[in-house]
Each structure stands twice: as C-alpha cells, then as structure tokens.
Length: 195
Figure (cartoon, rainbow, N blue to C red):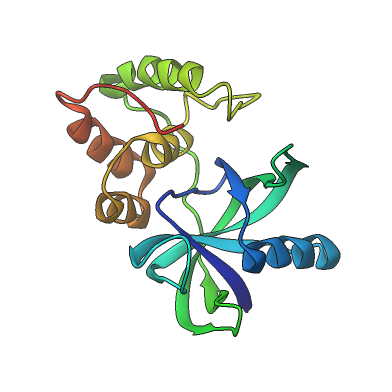
C-alpha cells in the first residue's frame, strides 16, 4: 500500500485528533486528492529535516489518518483536522517532483483497550487538565479516560516531548506499559500540552 506521507514534529495515534494548517502546494494537492479519492494519508514524526521545504526523513512508524473537518481561514490557509485510524510501518519512501514524500507501508495491529491500573488513576485527572487547555483547537466528545490505550496515546500526542521519546512510546506494543512509561516521564513534569 503506497500513501502520501506528512512528516511533522507532532504525532497522532489511532483515535487521536490533530489540527493542521496547510499552505504548501504539495500538501494542498495531497488533501485535494484525498477528498477526491476518499482516502487518507500518513502522519509520521520527523527524524531529519523540516516540515517545510524539501522532503524530510521520517521515523519508520506512523499513523494512517482521515480528514474529519476542514475550513479555509481568512488568510487563505487550509485548516484540517485529522483523526488517527491505524498505525503503520514504512517499508520504503520516494519523493515526488513536488517534494511530496510517499511511502510503501505495512498496516500494523493496534493494541486492545485496557483498564487503567489503579495506581495510575491520577493520570485521568492530569489528562482532564490538558484537555481543558486545548479546547480551543481539539475537542474530544467522549474522552475514554478509563482506557489505558486511549489515555496513554493522548499523553504521547499532547505532551511536549522530544520526537525520539514520542516515537519510542508510540512504538510500544502494550497500552499499560506505555501508560507506565508516561507516568515515569511525568514525575516532576509541569503539565502543559502542545496547542
């Protein structure tokens, strides 16, 4: 399966929401094609390079996303909100003339929901604080705060962590292990999310 890839300094995981402001022609064309073909694209973390300009080198894992909302702002930028659907591994990449990166991907299974361990219940309150902070850009109608998979995934997306740490956490195959790793990182951490 070959899809367009969007390397970013942000990450989105299954069931996560990510707002994007698009202005580069390659990404405007990508979104147009996604609407026309009723398809999605891949969001992956930047390993080397920048979000703008020449194609960047992504980390080997990403998430297939679909566009769930869009509008055009007064300044002409296209605003879209994407929702994560399924994790994937990038098998190989190529760069189109427009500098759009595409990748041959392998879809990966996602873990099953799991209960939040009792000793980590305090993370539910922490996530509620973060969700209140980001209400102007992301709103979850039904937050699954009692699901370790959902809760840990949102922390990975929203905390201002280095890309390599986010990638390592996202690559874990067990929801409770991910949440425990997040809890260790949060020790002595001031809770402010990315906007």
